[in-house]
Structure formats: C-alpha cells, structure tokens
Amino acid sequence: MSLAEARVRVVDDTSTARRAAHAYIDLLERRDWSGLAALLAGDVVYEMPQTRERIRGKNAFLRFNTEYPGDWHLRPRRVIADGRLAAVLLDVRVGDEQQDACVWLEMSEHGLISKIIDYWPEPYEPPPGRKHLVERW
Image 1 (spheres, rainbow, N blue to C red):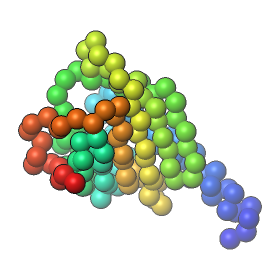
Image 2: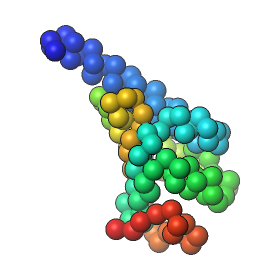
Image 3: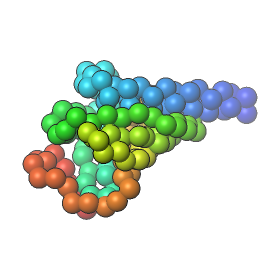
C-alpha cells in the first residue's frame, strides 16, 4: 500500500468512526434498537469501568439497553475521531439530573462498532437486576 493509499484509508476510517459515533448516540436516544443492532459487531464488548462491568455480544448489549430504567436522554457535545476510534463527550440527563459522560468507540475493519467503553464521572455500585447480562472484574 502506498503512502497516499494509507492516507485515504485513515481518512475513510476516521469518517466511518465519526459517522458511527453520531449514529450510535442518535439511535440510543431514539431507542431505535434495530438500527443500533445494525451498527454493532456481533461480538461487541461493552465496558463500564466505574462499576467494573462488562457485557459481551450484541444481543446482551441490546437487552441491557432495552431494560435500562428511567427516562434518560443523550446529547453529544463533542465527537472526535481518529482512524477506527471515536470519542464522544455526552450531556446525559435523567429527569432533572445532568451528568457528563464520555464514550469511547472502537470500529472493526468492517465498519461496525466492536468495543464501547462508557466513562461516568464517579464510581458507583451497579443497580440490581442486571447480573444476568454482565460480568464483574
């Protein structure tokens, strides 16, 4: 691969990652689970370092989100992408409560989201009722 071809590939990967990041947040906000499923690799891994939880696989991740309680809303404040990586600074609201969160996305070579890491401001114990979907570390 020539240097020019490598540069085009990085630009294409970066554009794909940026579009996927925007789509990911939009689909979650709209609760469009079938649209979200189309954006995810089958073996996607989702991690929440503050609770030390990990979810493996598209079906478990979708179920986690469909079962997640509350009337939560997401708004991207900033999206940064580089190659197959993207980061999103989020405004997260549940009722009157507002928090900032950061989501890191890794893309597969096929342009699907293969890893998601959600960072929240403070560590916390996970809510009950999701042990069937997560592993703790």
